Length: 611
Ligand code: F6R
Image (cartoon, rainbow, N blue to C red; front, side):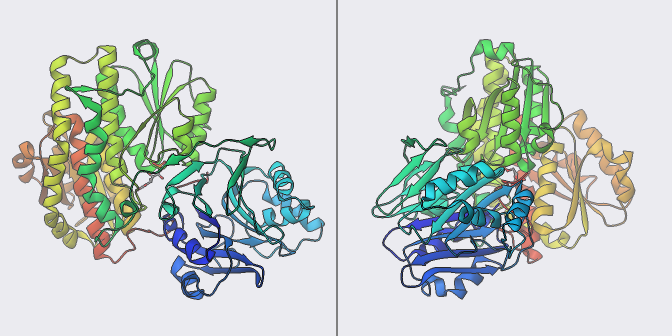
């Protein structure tokens, strides 16, 4: 949801801003812009609708713009359509301030009216433009004072980067509820929405907290709290390589990230298993806390929510405690029943999704204990949770999540075992069996990925279907939800996931000759039999059925469906970790066949920092 960057130093700023923005394009790609200041040329602002490349071509990769301080932006449009004029940076009427913004100014209408009464003429439809004009309105001579007054005036979520022609030796960074990272270099400093934008230049970073204001100069960074007292920021060293955020020979980030899943799963799980036991050292939840818990609330959005749906089946089965899975965007406004005996399990790849963050804060306010599962180290959710378990997936760049989803599932497996062990609700034989199978998951993932050509073949048969249904029961249904989301978000094919037994209560009327149904049936016993009955129901209405099953059940499935994709057997709880791989690959190859922009699907952004 928009990416912002800023540079101040002694080198030409524009090429650095453009390069940094290229690593943030996953956050939005409706338009891009930069503002760079040089004494000789003043404030030069370039903006262009469309991908960053349009802007980059306009300024010859930055060579056409001179100056050593500037800000840049890549936009996911909220207020005002994607257009040159609505692109950031926005500039005050006197040309003194240029602002880039990630987030939403909720009271911008009222501020716009106020400024209009004071003679301001607006050029864009954005909420952000009010900030540039407010800076001009409040500015007397001191940037910090003007920024503070603006912050008192605006409501909403924001990360701002601000340059001023009066103070070209200062670059200002501020945040509330939107991420902002400071990067410390030798003779230069940077600001950005995400670490990926700065690590090519420096590995020394710190994370701005809500309400803090950073003043960057070429030689240093001073951070103030909201009362303008200086704050000592802890610095962190980023320990992953730039190459982790590059395609490494793959045509798309999504393909690379799908293939990285065995490694990501290993990195997430193996260090947390010692002598056959799950060890979550940095978790402060103890046996008494867990015994006291009378409910688990899982809070997440999108694919992370789908992980929550799998988790509900596992946790209820192993812990015998009620588990509710809530869409974060609904949680806050549903008067949730949360008490100090509630454990809120918050799942987020980015750790910045505003719906999830807001829901987490609400759960905390109501007294819940927060355990977060997060991929981005140092993100807001990670920092505000009582406990955090990181998914060691590495940077995920493709908008459609794959390896983050898989590692979130892995962490759910670990948590389920850990809590069941603390509660004494799992017997040793079952515990050992699950742990043993958990350690084999990466190998089995590799087998599925090695056979990806078969999936590509099926994609080449089915890529032209207008509508696809995913069906399954229990954790197969949960994996189907994710398979369906993957397909629709990157291929634009309409698809829906249904609990197999639910289809006949209405939706089956959509099944007709040639409708593609992807049926997941990987759980032996009654679940398999019941799902196969549902498969027969759709087959008799003309559906083309692609089955996904485990090796032990392959023969049973082959009899009924048109085509089968088989994954290795594992413990039933872990089956979603394997089943989701063919679904991701299917979505990927279908989109490839349809010529879609796989890494940057239309209308989407990776980090959703607006409600
Ligand atoms: C879909 C996808 C989204 C995210 C959702 C939550 O492929 O990636 O549905 O899962 O926006 O994002 P996080 O996990 O960052 O909170």
